[in-house]
Length: 402
Ligand code: PLP
Image 1: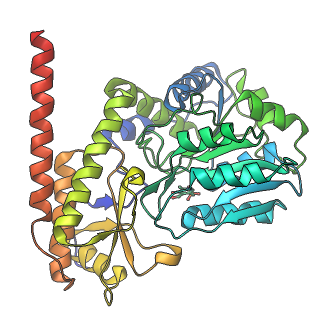
Image 2: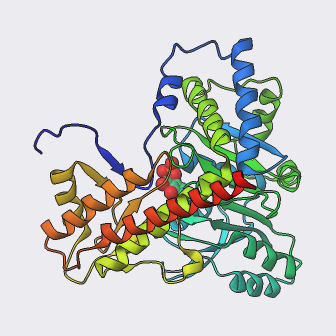
């Protein structure tokens, strides 16, 4: 690889770009994790997380990657042999399903084509058919990072309500939290799984469970073995601001700063910003004459875009050309879509010009790698972003005049 100047464009759909403010917050001496300064830090993090999950319930923080929080959600609420309902929306749903199987849960894995999210109608039918209430939990990945498809969580909750089924509802928000609209309490989610390295703009290394009262009740009788992941041990220590083991202290400094940044921008503005990036990127893809992996516009993800390459062209080669020529990393094709799909991450600490630079790298890369396409994707995105900015300014002017 030739020596690259200036900064690397990290446009994978997580880990994402880390803001300077967060880097500076992390870059300080570690403090005593059993002292009063730590307890104050931890309490601020627990409180701040609630507004991001939109819950009044409890949230725990693991010094672990997202996979740990997947396991924690299951072992704290379920017992060996329990039936769970899951949906094959992509690679990450498949990995979560594998963990459930390894833990001895009986998984009904509804097959999918990796081009749609979990279907609320299928949820309702499955639950209606389960008269004996054998299904103990419905598990859905909100934003499938391998496909750029976001399942409709509120509609899935409504389907569960219509079926009057008591199953717990668990949602993986690892690549949606703090990027896409998410409302744990309003949508009746019992366990939310999240990670630090995407919308929360932190390095990898922290993961989260946010739990409802119903989930905490289920934990009292759940019999799957657990130790490191035990909510009971974690919550007991957290009540005085501490952890049952050594926490990732410096990442918590970063988390506190990231939560402050999200509060300053306002979550709704964060979601609008990502919606703009999503739409601009989809316009670029269409202008290139390439195909989006997602087929249902109601399910387009605003945190990443997965693009199908024409037959005979491989994403590995395209990404190699783009990395070598433009110092930019794009997301690879994962699992069943390996080789066929590349992913553009546009989540986290990101703005319009970073998106334009990213799309420029893709458009030039398509040409260099000999992928058949039309020019004009970047121009289509720019026209949209400029129009959106103009309309926002007009709205702000009208508001200040009235
Ligand atoms: N779930 C989703 C939706 C993800 O995108 C990822 C990772 O990218 C995971 C789970 C697994 O998280 P981790 O790799 O942090 O263990």
